[in-house]
Length: 302
Image 1 (tube, rainbow, N blue to C red):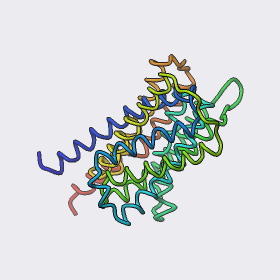
Image 2 (image 1 turned 60 degrees about the horizontal axis):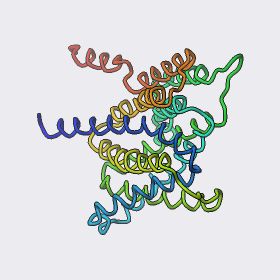
Image 3 (image 1 turned 180 degrees about the horizontal axis):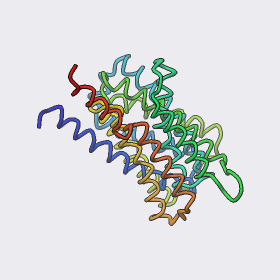
């Protein structure tokens, strides 16, 4: 196996590990919000990750350049706003629903590229967008009407912001050190979260063992390890493969939600999640049709 294939294999392993960790993060966040307010929870997770990475890679911190700061701060803005809407939104929806609604960012990415780079999405993007819309409608259907509550709406905004984070990460990670990018974005997100916490939320009086466990899981695993793995993974594989692998976060999130906190998984949720998952596959794999047509075209004598 040559060096490039080894790098791509390790990148895939890093990204699937990220998806698994993030899946568990939905449950950890929901548990943490029962004991600590959203901005303080975010400040704790991001500052913990920032100080840990800075200590481990202090030699790299000394060599930070203006380009590193520019890239890290840009990614950090997307990270902070995405997690603000996601963390607050989880107070009003369930981990399983949020996991799949967050996964819709994969469907949004081609349209975001269209706005930024004037590259028109293909037919599969439109099919994926339609299936995703129907899936969201089914997932949020309750009784005789759609029940797109505040938490679901904030999660969809989070998905859009996270789509921007994926685009920005792919752009900057290509030429900059992924560790430095991670340190800068965590630092910015942690400071902004702390400022918002001090302004808008009461100071936590005490933290029990459950809250501390949530903070440690989110800070060490969901933030420090997972985002570094994501940034490194996107450096050595294509955006398409990265998006497919990261989208499985929704599956793991739902699985952990059902197994760990015994969330009820209804028929509507199953159908809605299935449609959203198919929409993600449609956008990112084209069901293999486009590749097959290209191979046929290349093998046809002229």
